[in-house]
Image 1 (cartoon, rainbow, N blue to C red):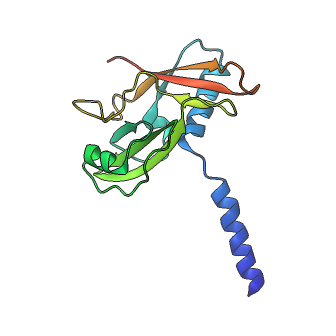
Image 2: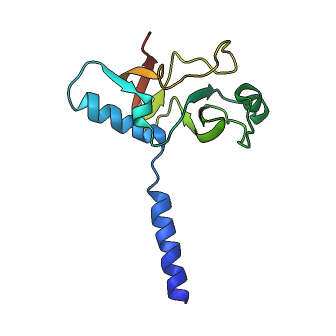
Length: 161
């Protein structure tokens, strides 16, 4: 019995460590589709890079409270307040939060993603979110000065439609 419990714990630990973050998926997608093919610019369609269905994407900046997020998305929201130096992506599908992820736009110790032209959803007027049809970006990979050797900033700028 104890051996079985230990095996289950090991399996859970292994699989929980294998979960990729969306930011990691985006970085890999850019490297695979742009950098390795020596393209000067690359288009990323966000719906193709996600592993879940969504119909709205909200962005929130540092220090945004969960109450503020709840007011903007107009849905039940149990997430934490956002820490300093982080941004949060909140994905919604059929009026339910289906995924959220915090990311740093700038980090000296690892590669990061950045959406430099995307304004915080608290500041948007109409609508305060992106949809799969307009979440299309031009990706650019740049070196972060004085960061680790393999640390890059992957900037995603919206394609104007």
